[in-house]
Length: 84
Image 1 (spheres, helix red, strand yellow):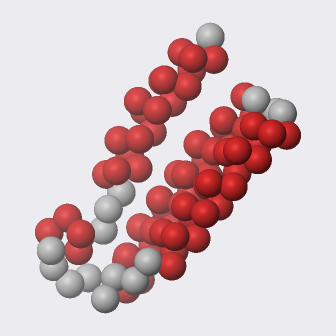
Image 2 (tube, helix red, strand yellow):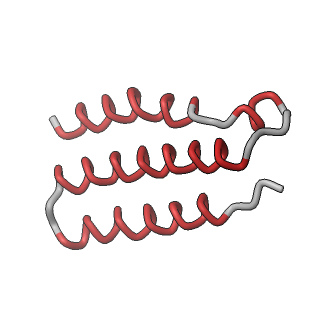
């Protein structure tokens, strides 16, 4: 049953995360820095929402660490990325 819910979660949320790209990336035009930052924050929110749901399905410390550490690393990488 856990396998079913995890597949459903991936099929529903991953396309939403990929669709949340700023106009500058989609169309190659210059956009406001605030717009790009807003899209990055929405992407981070989606990553942490998925990570939280996975942590709640398996509330075991090693599994939580395996999920939380890469999510944290990915969040810092996305927020630190320069778009200049």
